[in-house]
Length: 222
Image 1 (cartoon, rainbow, N blue to C red):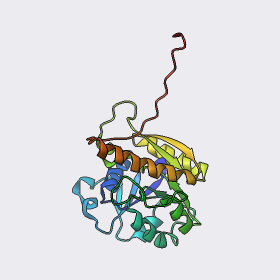
Image 2 (image 1 turned 45 degrees about the horizontal axis):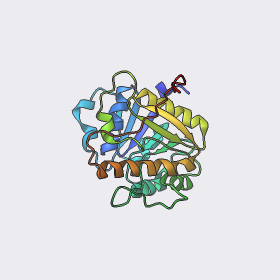
Image 3 (image 1 turned 120 degrees about the vertical axis):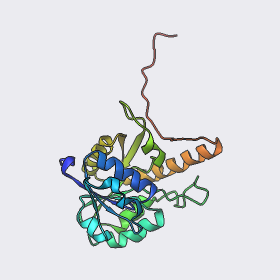
């Protein structure tokens, strides 16, 4: 599939993550269909003349999109699934949320489930993907010259969907890794909680994220 012609829906487009994704997607040239119950920033004049389409209803945004990014909190994601079920048949639905506890450094899901798996159970006719959740909103503010600074990860039971989402992620300035089936989303959601815990414990500031580094060992040293 040619991703340059894809229509990407962002639900929760006025939120912190939603607006960050919105800007990157528009800068990459995608047709973006935005919906937010509190429209706020999506009506900003800076978006006039861009490829942004603002919709008054969730249903309209979903119907117009090939891929739907759910940039909403965990409880809202499950609520929205009830609406998506009628309009997202065979479409890729991306769970971005982390089911964080009140302290933000743990998750509220049990060890054998994830937010993404819960979403998939509510959307049996859609293609559920976990992605973007290991990126912080601050990571979108970092100017990346040359190689992407931050990595992010994809989990889904559908390899073709993973390839599509991977290409989208790479096109907006991050580096994507497909880590396996949707059950791996349990690990990805806990990775985000762990990173938040580290940042709180050590009082780290600025944009934090993950990056896989490969180094060739110097075998000449004994």
